[in-house]
Length: 199
Image (cartoon, rainbow, N blue to C red; front, side, top):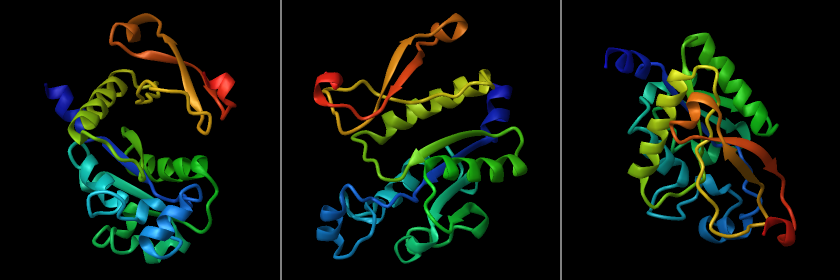
């Protein structure tokens, strides 16, 4: 129990909120009246998807250990949602350089402050039917990462049907001690494919 408490104080979260939201632009324009990306829209439940993500991860990650990756051009859209968030907890990119750049920029900032950090990355534009269940999964992933310090853990759910418009992950049984925890190993990431391949 002592070790568990000690590792919990090194848990960090990064909310990735720098996407342009091009795929749903027609919908978000209809909802908001402008070209804001979906993470800054009130699509479900009266709050923006970014605000919902903030609320969701507070169950496991301290507010002061949460970073937000945003774009400078989106400042009019995120200012309200991030009111009260200290500047040191914002990674403001001058331009969108993709997810890898956002992940690396936030990793560099966190490890300078906490070399023992265990870090979870969250998209800012997802919705979950059961936040508690999702965050219970995040808590389990943190626990595994804290035991296996060299691991990268991906929290995922099985697909219910083929969706050729998105990439997907092919998993296989894990080896050694990880397999006893119920984890699967990522065998391959498939890029977007036609329906015949996705089936």
